[in-house]
View 1 (cartoon, rainbow, N blue to C red):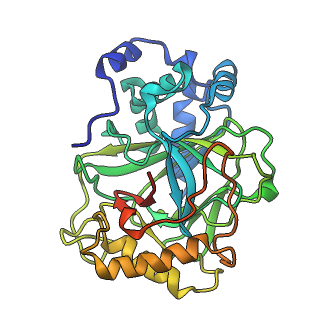
View 2 (cartoon, one colour):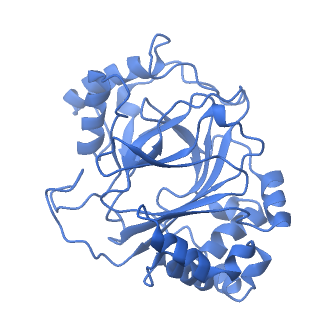
Length: 336
């Protein structure tokens, strides 16, 4: 059974600390940011200097190295490393997550976005530290609607950039799209200590769909945190990617409209949307599709997934047995 990632005794300690020691000046101008959010039809704000200077420098210096404890996403839809084990992080990074979970910050963020009922997600489902290597990407998608563990409703995303001196031509920007996921409506550049906060709903298509073109051994680093609330949406079979109960309990992905349609990826998207179990020998049909997936991902001739940048101490898989690939929550595939 999945356990909470939050140490409630430590959270109680954080609740008694002054948040201005952690966050930038924005924390003293909540009414201003609330007005900006309300005036923005796309319901997002971009905040510079999200953390205090001393804090963000310590976060940058202590960012953990990628090792075997990180989740690894290797597929044509999503290429990245992720780590949600916040209690093992260096203290300053751990504290950022706990302050974001605190009552004070939760209430301030809720006021900015007009959602007074915000709650932390103690399972940090999909949240944590994220690292995208060269040729990393994250296809356009809608996040889960109904939390697969708590049945809470996903309401708000915070993405804080932790990469210094990132060049715009390297891509990696967070892109927000319209409700038909055809037109780009906003782009959040990868700027050190800048955060984008945006609502998640039935129209909040977003991602970083263009392959990252940073040099080898340079990485797009970010901190992701999500808020939830009690379930307010009604079930409907007309929503994107819903299950039999009429709710979307994992992310649903699409191809970018400017990409050439690839039938193999469309098959993978279908599997991703309809499968939530370990692939085993009994899953003959899925196994067959995953063999195709294996060829697509690791083929040097693939236009979608070329060579990716892997830290030298992590070996790239020489071969993947389809029965060892499993589908869990928002992850398309996870290799251990």
